[in-house]
Image (tube, rainbow, N blue to C red; front, side, top):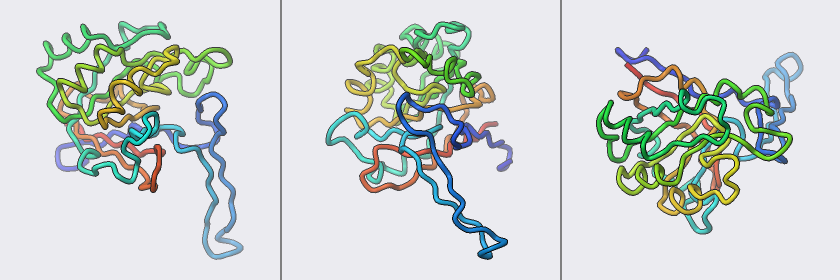
Length: 231
């Protein structure tokens, strides 16, 4: 607890068991020092920048866009809202956030604050221990995501600083041209959080989000520790 606020961890533990983008190697950990032998414990860790719950810098899919070390830290602590479309998505791996979903959310909860972060719950967080159900692999990628019209409203009219989701990617898995990444969010400096979990524990509004990422020079992304403060 922090005052009257509770902390909700939205982060998957990072290990070799985490579901990765097809073809990407899983994280590895090698013990190099132990307390018994060396007086302290230390490991050598290897991971792709986009592993587990992670952060996409705009340069991830747009040449010349903002790299990780140049992200404005002010954007990493912001108000957030959580849009839950898990009921309408169900088991539909091609489901997406639509303009109607955003309009319905704002009718019920008020306008999404300018400069905030939007978190999207599709229900896929419940599948993140099973690659076949979470990613559709082996075979073509299949998971829900942000629709282009909804993303355009959030980026161009609500001026969000970040988009988050409980799947492997902001775009639907079947959207192999990555329209949100390449045409809407990253070109405008908007970053992403992917592989979130525990979104079911959040209210729709009243959230403060803290995004912890490695300050990697020229990084395209980083595993992230994402904490929500909620009433």
